[in-house]
Amino acid sequence: MALTKNDLKQIGEVVNEIVDKKIDALAQSLQRQFDLIDKRFTEIDKRLELIDKRLNKVEMEIAHLNASTSQVQRDVSEIRDNMVYRQELDDLQSRVALLEKKLGVKSGK
Image 1 (cartoon, rainbow, N blue to C red):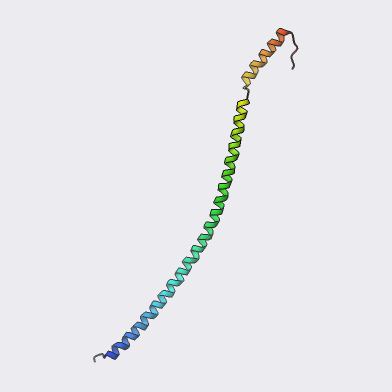
Image 2 (image 1 turned 135 degrees about the horizontal axis):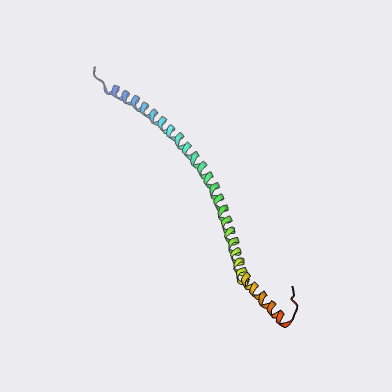
């Protein structure tokens, strides 16, 4: 039994209908997967925004610490410039005591 053109046409329509349904099902499945991926990217974006805010806060805190450290360094430098070492002070006290003794002046202590 040979197939007629009409038979082939009907078979082609059935095959096209089946293929179209399969393609539609695949497209819907892919769309659901893309929607899930989009949702995950949205969640990741939100998390990255939070991380970015936290990072900005940390950067501000570091800048504040740097400013504080700079002030402490300036203070230490100023103290160092005006500082008298213990040995120098002891030497000066000895010399003043000797001068007071030679001049006959009572010590201020």
